[in-house]
Image (cartoon, rainbow, N blue to C red):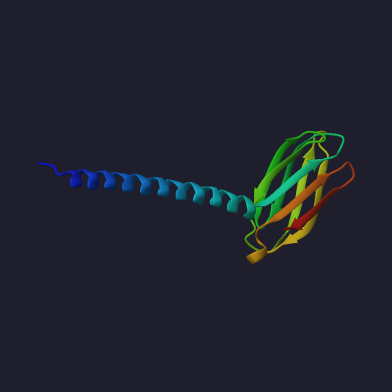
Amino acid sequence: MVFPLQNHIGYLRVRMKRRALILILIFLAAAGVGLAAWNQWMKNTLVVHNTSQQAIEEITISVCRRDYVLRNIEVGDSKNVDFVVDGDSGFVIAGTLADGQEIEGSFGYVTGGSAAHHNNVRVEVADTAVTGSQEHY
């Protein structure tokens, strides 16, 4: 024989388990959104903008013993890449325009530690020069 109180206790257990599951799912979703926002905020971004009169066939930006290669950047276009700062380094640029002309330059400085994140770097390739600027936010 089942007593009415036993049915009620079983019903409460199921409801509590369901609530706990919903709360866990809400917490995991919020943690995932927070982690994605943190990752986005912590990254370093390098943007190459082509203001020359011809396409950039290939450009390599070296920083912190790593090479970042971007290819086929049309006139007026930009491409970007995230980069890692794991020490002290400047930026060294080498590339080739569509007609075979070699381009090169260097600029800036990044350092590891607390300044290893939030770096925005912009490389501009013009007809006569390759320049760079950086911002730490």
